[in-house]
Length: 131
Image 1 (cartoon, rainbow, N blue to C red):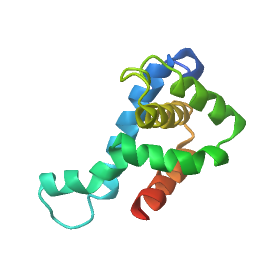
Image 2: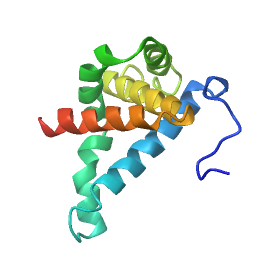
Image 3: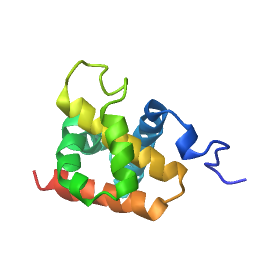
Image 4: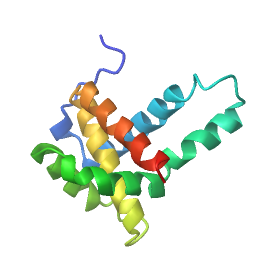
């Protein structure tokens, strides 16, 4: 068995569950990515990754990345943007964009498209770091 194996296919998982998984992937990726930035206390590491995990940072990145999504990814993005979870805070556009991006990342992760996940998350770094 693989470490992150799931018996469910990505298309069988609710959009909110895809975003939930995507959020976990985001968190683990950025924690691991910045772990090598020296021996810092966890509070400092948390502050370093917060811009990438915040709905504001994810929204900024998503607005740049949305035109570079495949057709399949764009379908998941639209579902995530319109999901119940995305509407949790009413019509908070940043939250909806962030949820949509997390759903795409969750979908790709469950599809085992790890290179594409990494490509998108590295693009998030580029966009958010440039701000």
